[in-house]
Length: 222
Image 1 (cartoon, rainbow, N blue to C red):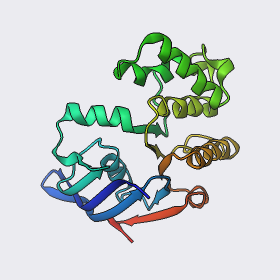
Image 2: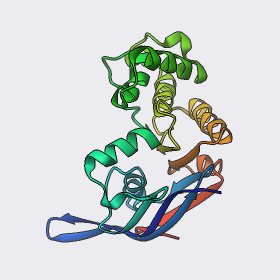
Image 3: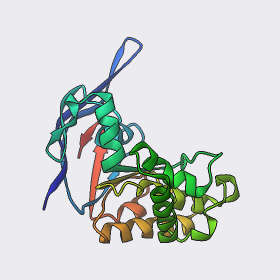
Image 4: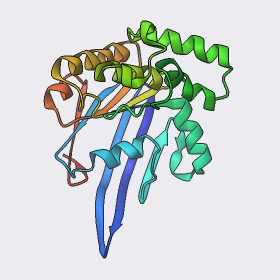
């Protein structure tokens, strides 16, 4: 199976006042196409830092991160942005929708940065909203939608550029248990369709739905 993402001896350190904080301490990880991985660990274990690394949102202090064959540690920010836009879809705990845009416009937004024409953007955005069961809410603003509906819009937006990998950071954290289960079922379905899913969660019940659980403690995989 094709390796989509590889972390090789990845370290990440932050300066906090006079102290040096080791957020990641020698991470080795290989993620293959079609994996569904849950990253778990206590607060401060390095989960968010690791998510930033695999999502090309930050670079390592030491080590290498490969997205396919490309070592992203040596790319300019503009090149990283292009890779993120094309190959990685993000789903956040707080949805991160643009409040002044409709559901359709929010989903279409990532395609604009890939210079896809307006008609094609809108057609694909509507298809994706229908896929997540919100075709009838296309013209609603985020504040006219429930939390679960907003997260489904966020999932549709993550799929906009047909990425290889979907990164979900505590995707059910702001949802009640029933709605959270519906959102998780959606990730399971997307994984069955061939998407690689990497999910950060503190909820072991959610993590059990993944094919693999990666436990972090003090910046290391245990």
